[in-house]
Image 1 (cartoon, one colour):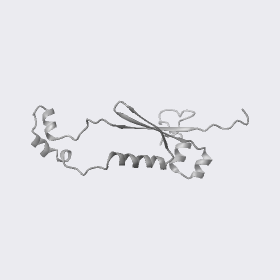
Image 2 (image 1 turned 90 degrees about the vertical axis):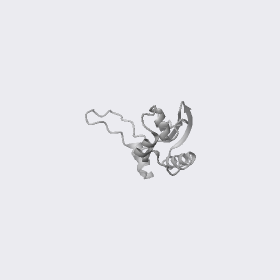
Image 3 (image 1 turned 60 degrees about the vertical axis):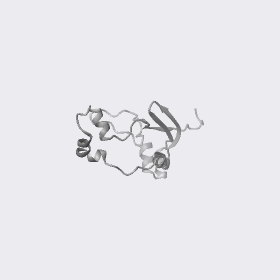
Length: 136
């Protein structure tokens, strides 16, 4: 239809986080019990010191998530939904696709590459006529 407004085009990104609450830090005693005592906790501690070493606490998960979400927001991604599916927390993002001239004007390599450069096909396969853009 002539004169009809052009529809916005969107690209989407889905991120998942495993929220399994049973994944505690292993201990040499737990590993020894799991192997029915075949290896002693002392042996496991001595032979695998990096695995059982006391480590500096990581930042709180909320702080880690905030840093990650802010980095996506800085690239133009807007979170539109969060949902739990089993042990996965799914985050759904979208951003408007830019045409080539808008991408150049924006000057963002992240945005321009995702909006205008098709994903290259493997060398052994012919390139499809209309490849989807890279989701990054």
